[in-house]
Amino acid sequence: MAVTQQPGRYEPSDFQTGLCDFCDDCGTCCCGLFCYPCLGCSIARDMDECCLCGLSMAIRSVYRTKYNIKGSLCSDFMAVACCPVCATCQLKRDIDRRKEQNIF
Image (cartoon, rainbow, N blue to C red; front, side, top):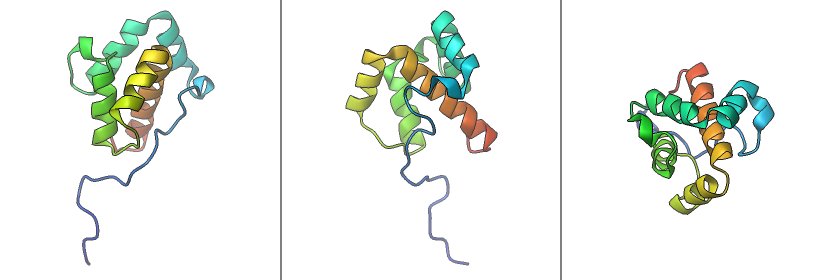
């Protein structure tokens, strides 16, 4: 059998949910609205980072790069700057979906 793809590489894709897909996971949405720092710490814990990193543009960029998600540093900055709760909830939803798919 021929190897056609490097191990651990992912085809370019999008986040599995949209930036404003709040109803896809109401629990994550409520956590983001009512305890935003807690959601950031949860993301940082998932990614083995310092709790203070969970709400930053950098963690979104690292995650996007790791899973080959389409975007740029500029798009990460704009998402986090314009709607930090939406961007953080989107990231957490994507992490949770990848855990369910056993690709996290």
